[in-house]
Amino acid sequence: MITTPSPSSPSLRLEPVTSANFDTVCAVEIRADQSHLVSPVVKSLAEAYVHGEVARPRAIVDGGEVVGFVMAFHDFAWNPAEDPADRRSGIWRLNIAAGHQGKGYGRFAVREVIEEIRRRGGSQAYVTWHAGEGSPEQFYLGLGFHPTGELSGDQPVGVLPLTT
Image (tube, rainbow, N blue to C red; front, side, top):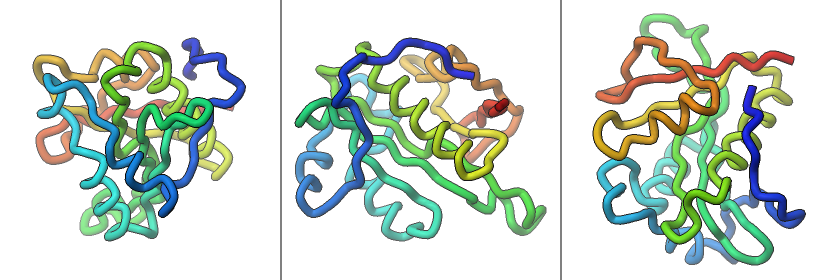
C-alpha cells in the first residue's frame, strides 16, 4: 500500500479533462531529458478518445494550477486472445510538469487512481514503464509496485496488490 507523503494542499485534486482546461492540460510538459520515457499529454488524450470505454484521463490540479496529468485504465482486457477474463486496471500515463516534479504530485495522483480502482472492486493495480536511464522504475517500485516479469511492448509491467 502506498504510504508515502503527498502535498498537503487541501485544494489538490484530480479533475476531468474538459473543453475548459484542455489547452492547459495539453501544455503540461515534462523535463526535456524525460521525453523518451513518456508520451505527451495530447497523445494520451487521443488514446483516451479511441479507448473511451477504459481510459480515464485527469488533470492534476493544485489550487487553480494544472501541475500534471494522469490517465488510468479500468477493466482493460489485457490479452483477450489468450485469456479474456484477464481484465486489469492501473496507471496508463503520468506526466508531472517539469517545474512541479519532486513535490509529491505523482505520488498523489497514483494514490488517487489506486483508491478509485479499490472503490471499483479491484484487487490489483498495474503500471508499465520504460527501462533505462532516467526511468520512472524506482518511483513505481518505491510506491510498492513489483515487476510481474511480463512486458507490454518493450516496457516492464509492475503490479501492486491492493489489500483492504
